[in-house]
Amino acid sequence: MKKVLIAALLVISVLAVNAKEDDNKSKSTDTESQATMMISGSIADELSGESLVGVEVKLEGTDMKAYTDFDGNFSFAGVKPGEYKIVTTYISYEKKSEVVNVEANKDNIKIKLQSSN
Image (cartoon, rainbow, N blue to C red; front, side, top):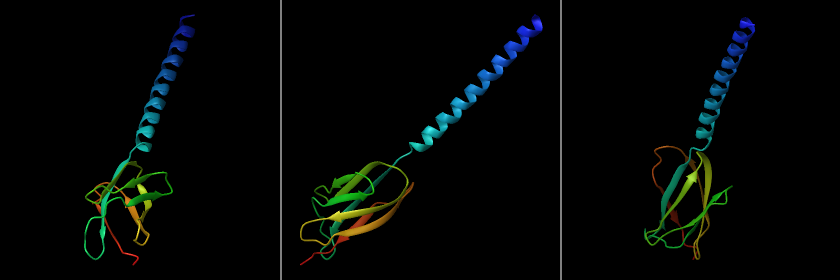
């Protein structure tokens, strides 16, 4: 009887340790998949260098969209690392697309738009 009880306790303890290890592995995987970055940059006129206000900036392939502020700056938070196409549209300017690779320590993106006139 004692041998059966000891064997049962041993099996239960082994199962508990394995369950704890599986839980730790799933937590580390969840943390890695949730790692996000921030994309930021500025948009200006190609000839004058003047900042452009209200430019629509989209991340193609996502539902993320932003507009430039009074200084021509935009930003996207919560972007997963990878390659994205940034598409900019503005009245009286040509539409522009630029591919960026989102990774740690990325400098600000500077985009120059050309007038369509």
